[in-house]
Each structure stands twice: as C-alpha cells, then as structure tokens.
Image (tube, rainbow, N blue to C red; front, side, top):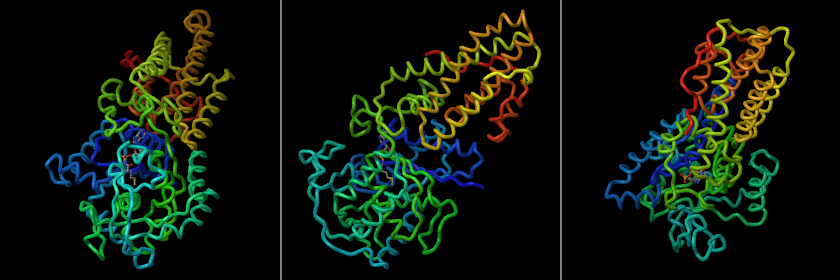
Length: 501
Ligand code: MSP
C-alpha cells in the first residue's frame, strides 16, 4: 500500500492555538484525509514544542512549573484540534521521555562523528523566536517578527558543523532532491545559501534550564530548535540508532509557514544528512493569515480563537473558509465579515441551496433514478475533468483552486436547472425530467466526495439526503468517482445543510 507521511510544525506550548496555527493544521488534515480517501496508508503527525526559555518564563509568570504549563497548553491544542476535527495519527510532545531520549541519542551520534565541537557564542537573541539574529537581520535592533529588542548573549556552548553542509544543501535543493515549494520560497533559500557563508550552529545553551540535557555535559541543554525538529523522527518512534529507519520515513510533505523556512530548509536537512537519514520529499511553505497586514499571533495581541469561529460557522464550514479564502502559498488578510460573505456565497446560497433545489425537484416522484442510458449529455466528461483538476490541485496543494472548481460545478448545475426547467419537464416529458434529475443527483454525489476531505460531516449529510448513507462510505474513491453507476432510490430533504447566517 502506498504510504503518505505528512507533518505540521509542532506548536509552541507557551501560546494557545489561534486561527493562524489552525491554518497549517487544517491544511495538513485535509491533505491527510484526501490521501486516506485514495486508500493510502497515511501517517499525519502534529504536536507541541515544549522546551526553551519562553516556556520557563511564562510558567514563572503564572507561578506554575514549566511541565504544568506544558500539560495544560498541550491539552488545549488537542482539545482545539478535536473541535476542528483534526485526524492526526500521532501527537508528539517534546517533553515525552521517549522523545527526550531519542534527541539525546541523536546528539550523541553527531558528537561521536565529530560533527559537534565546543566554543563560545556571542550574539543577539530574540527570546520570542528562541533564536539568534545577525545584526543585519534585525530592524533597528528589533526582531522583524516580534518587533522587540534582541538581547546580547554570550555563552559557552557546543556547535554543530552546519557550515560543512552548505554545498550539499545548495545542490540538493537546486536539483529538487529536496523539493521546496512554492518556487519563490525555493529561490529564497537558494539565494540565502548562495549569498551567505553558512555559520556553524550553536546547538546547546547553559542559560536555558528548561530543555533536554546533552548526554555528555548535562548542564548544557539542547537548543530548542534542534530538539523540536527531531520530533518528525521521534514521532514515528525512531530510536536514534544507526541504521534504523521508521517504516513511514521519509515525510512526503512537510507543511510550514514562511517564518520557519530556514530552520526547515537548512538546519533540518543538514541534521538529517549528518544522521545519515533520507531527506523529506517536499517542504511546502504556506503564507500567513494577517489581520490588517500583521501576522496573527498571541504576542501580537490579534489572535482569533478558532473555537469561537467554529461556533459561529460550524467546524466544517470554517475548514472550508480557511482554505478557500486565498491561495495556500500566499499571504491573505482575513476578517470575520469576509468569512460571512464567503459562507453565504459558497455554502449557503451555493452548495446548500443547490442540494435543496435538486431534492425538491426529485421528490416530485416516488420513482427511483438510474443512469439515463440514452443520454449523451455533457456531464460525464465534465465530471471526469473536474476530478482530474481536483487531483492535480491536491498534488500542488492548491486548496483554494479546488474550492473554486467545486463552486463552479455548483454554478454549472444551477444553470443547467434554469435552462432545462425540470418542473416543466415533469409534466411535459417525464423521461427527460428523470434524466435531468439523474444528472443533478449524480453530480451532487460527486460533490459530496470532493468536499469530503474539507467537510466530512457535510459530505455524510449529502450522502444521507441522496439515500446513500452507508453505501457510499464503503466505496473506494476509484469506484466513487465513476459516473453513472449509482441508483438513487430514496432521496429526501434532510436538515438545511448550511443555514444562512
Ligand atoms: N515551534 C515552532 C515550530 C517547530 S517545528 C520543528 C513554531 N511554532 S508556532 O506555534 O509559532 O508556529 C507553528 C506554525 O504556525 C508555523 O508554521 C507558523 O508559520 C504557523 N503560523 C503561526 N501564525 C500564523 C499565521 N498568522 N498565519 C499562518 N500561519 C501561521 O514556529
């Protein structure tokens, strides 16, 4: 069976999930569900990133132990992901003993291979990013993301020989042996690797207590990003041992936002090369949700609560709105009012209304509807085309294009109804009436399959209204997407699919 391993970044546990963090996770979930629908063996990993100075600081402010903060907030992420129907197969927490042991083991291996050495680090550090910046990268001495002054730090620590991987990384990304998409992000990394001399990476800290200790010098803790990146391996149960490769390895797609591109396109593959592990096939870098042009986040004070949004729109609709509002690889500004407009246009007046219209027309007769053998209409070819686009768009992670093509299909059906006036045919030409309704019911069945990765419950409701509650779910996608094989015997108006807001 074809396997599909997909990851999201692991989320900072000192913050609470917001709509921005939900974005990556919902996209990964839709992709995971699509690959499951295709019959692949999917492993979808997400989790929480729980070490580092920031976590310790937040816990101190709250007068609780760091582990308590991690437990509380990690549970919050799981709760929100449940609300958003995130079907992850693995949830990794970096304070899991197994993960901690694996990270220590991996570092020991790098040390044994002489890829790690001790020296002094001096630099400008942003506590919120948990990373050092070069003076050039700061804007007026401030972190470009958090707009806070970077502090000057100096410490004894261990370094990973990142610089020795520069040429190899450049070559691998250039030749698409490690695919970085979209193209502008690939060019960004290549530009960075061409124009800058890679410096070795400080991979341990003495001044950060809340972290995994280096096995050979426990007062040094492992740099939180190295610890975090290795989750993609520990989440599959990797032991860190030489020669052991988990069955699901390597990732087919790793999703991430543009703020963490370099960690994933430079440090991460270098670590894997050093550990002699195959590289991920593809890194896909999506854009940001912004509010008035500013990245959404707790530290920005503009976070939108995904649970609140799910209460307003319903989880399925929210998932659809989030992914259809703008192209995945770009930034997009959002507001609740834009979501309202889109909800009413695509879902309430669009798909929901079409379903009601078609069912009302179908209910005019007690007859069942089966494939109109005589009819050579445009539907079979159109639907085949739609599936082709659908699968190509999934391959390219063009979620918004998928939504647009489904919306177009809805519009096409509405026009088909207006043109053919089946309410008249019902009286004047019953057999043609039945053909027209068959085409519409069958198209709705296809649409229910197409929206399934985005809106699984709504898809179930459509199947139910079409009288196919159980039979469709037993089909493979290959069978489900065939035209004209389904008979509709028991259609009925269920509850309104998308009530108007
Ligand atoms: N803990 C690190 C990742 C370590 S992975 C080895 C981290 N965490 S995060 O919680 O800050 O961000 C997680 C993901 O959410 C990132 O991909 C980030 O780009 C994404 N987003 C955070 N805010 C976002 C928006 N406003 N819009 C879209 N995605 C956003 O980074």
